[in-house]
Amino acid sequence: MKVENTKAQMRKGVLEYCILSILSRSDKYASDIINELKEAKMIVVEGTLYPLLTRLKNAGLLGYRWEESTQGPPRKYYELTDRGKEFLGELNTSWHELVTAVSFINKD
Image (cartoon, rainbow, N blue to C red; front, side, top):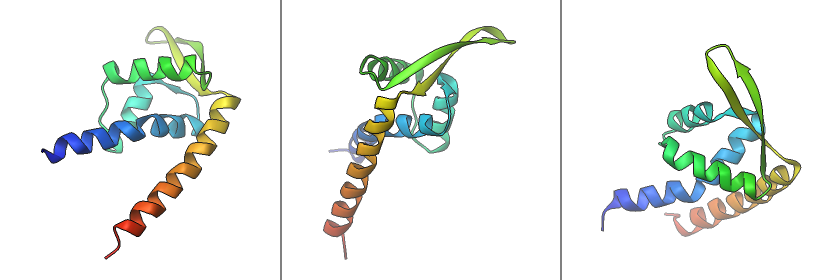
């Protein structure tokens, strides 16, 4: 078993949470989301991000608006809906519970 496969699965498992967290701070264009994820070492490509954004939008957690761009076609900016904010709050609670549980199990 390769550790890289497990690490990739762990990142995938928290990707949705990370995207919602990024959007909780401000509305973002997809490439801005990718850049923030890359800065955090959560490497993501467009082929992974766009289907996830669509799924989150279809679930009512995200909305979007179009903005004109001076450098090309209009851009789609994603934002959290009220339902998305509630969902993120639940994920925050679950995340802290998970970190606490793993820390307890992994203590020296």
